Length: 93
Image (cartoon, rainbow, N blue to C red; front, side):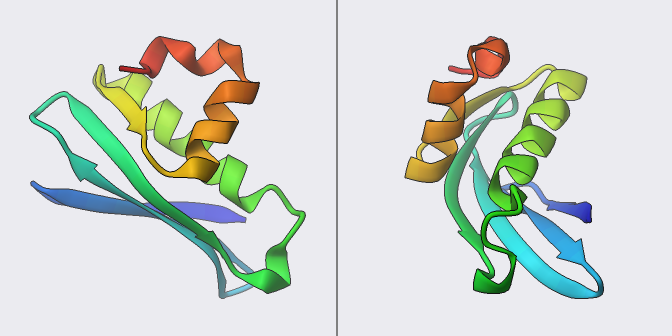
């Protein structure tokens, strides 16, 4: 599985692709120049149970750490990943 990121000035998304199919999509909005708000996560039902959603959240965490930004997980799924993984709280705001 690969995860692609598309980013612009206001919004962006992470897309998981497996075997040429879209496995999941997680969207975010920029809140200023140093924060993103994850607002939606969806996983293709064909890929349920394969950690697609968690992998996209972890890719967002890696992006945040690399670029010194913070994340607000507004999406209930993304929030649940943060709630279960205290080792990624360094990127929360």
